[in-house]
Length: 124
Image 1 (tube, one colour):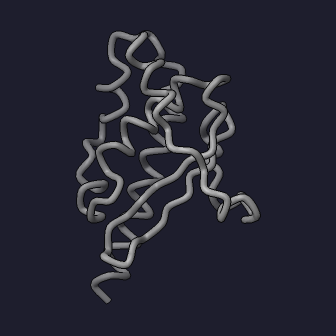
Image 2 (image 1 turned 60 degrees about the vertical axis):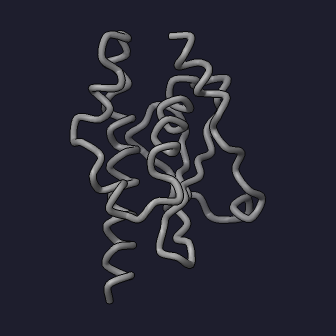
């Protein structure tokens, strides 16, 4: 659990350029905690994700996002799309946080949707 808390502190701060955006399209409604995920397609076709979540209130959510972003940020969409369907379950296994699995899985699904859209846009 300590390692998870350590990861929660590694979540990148949300850049100012996202502060004035209408967050409706970026909110993950399935998550009990307010989470906004902002995808950004880079000029080279890679994706960088940012999230706005209160890490002090929801360190588990922040940690899962930090771990996930460490794996997929600045990578082609295929890397995000390759995340296993049971990624969250595997990550949360033995921690006893099953109630969070639905919302956390919804966050990963959102990342994959953007990656799929980005991949389609790049090949068009």
